[in-house]
Picture 1 (cartoon, rainbow, N blue to C red):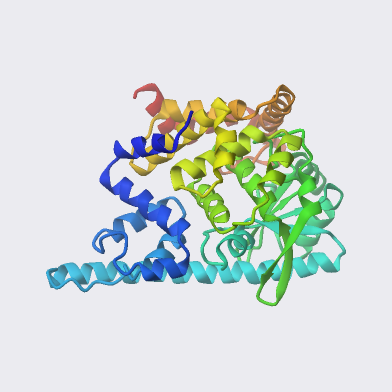
Picture 2: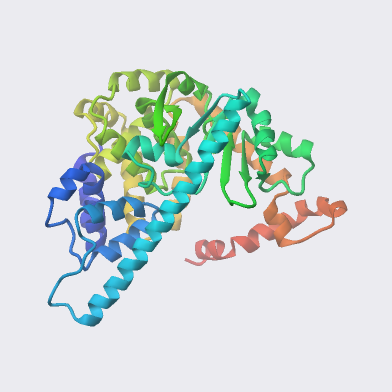
Length: 430
């Protein structure tokens, strides 16, 4: 069974910097802002904050670190024993970090303004749409818009409204990305086939991911109709606008599903899950238990909860931990994913481990054979899309006349080898 000490043992074998990174991140995701402000001594040495911040930036959780360090007043340099050159260098780094966060806030404000505008346009067309992830998730979990880094707007609509909403966004100036080579009719059919569509505004550069299903694109296909989420929406207030989004219990389920969809490669998802659990003392765990049984995703959710509990010390109730630990495969998944995340932070990279987890993690996480059949169908669906649809990468590799587009099917194997040659060489000659 995976115990809390398993991850501690893994961290003991990691470098001191990695240990500091996770202990600091655990504090920032476990303590309230007032608690961080009261900790006047800070958790980390002031001459070490830059290294940890760079690690956080690499794993797309820099806003969490920046806000935590700022509240602890660890972003100042007043050590009289440091040389003037050292202080000048650190202050230069500090100004660069502050500028990065200012740019992050500007980007968030721009995306939020566009979200409000687009949602108003969609509502006027009487289309039911639910924004999720991005700023909505940040406001719901962290209490402000700036704690999460994100670069797109995610909106889900009913299948019946998918094409109408896509056309509406195109009328607003958005351009479907990656469909330049297809006719309008083929592009629409291809979008419906994938269950999602990425649209980019050429002037503002804002990207919208429009979803016709919660997970989409075949990376994790389940038989469960996740539209049940939309029957239990809660309201989130941003500025003067109110948005319906997932309830906290459904958000926990969705974060675990989303984490598995990406093979738990995102430390940001683990942080989101941890903060949501730590800041929601009134979560209905009985409801979550019953719901994930009905959805047949118990192992997926329990492995995610164990991951947050063991790696980030999330305050998961002990009885829930015991239930999760009773599934040995969920415990194994938590342990292996924790090992991979710690190794990545530590600068280690095992291609054999990456390939194994990326290929088999989802299969092992899915408990029921019926769901595994749906998952396999999703893989073949995705492979069919990759094999029989020309994309912008093919066109960048070789520019052909429209009448010669059929040649792209023969060119693609060479393009893939060229794009991934360094990865292939590492695997073959490691």
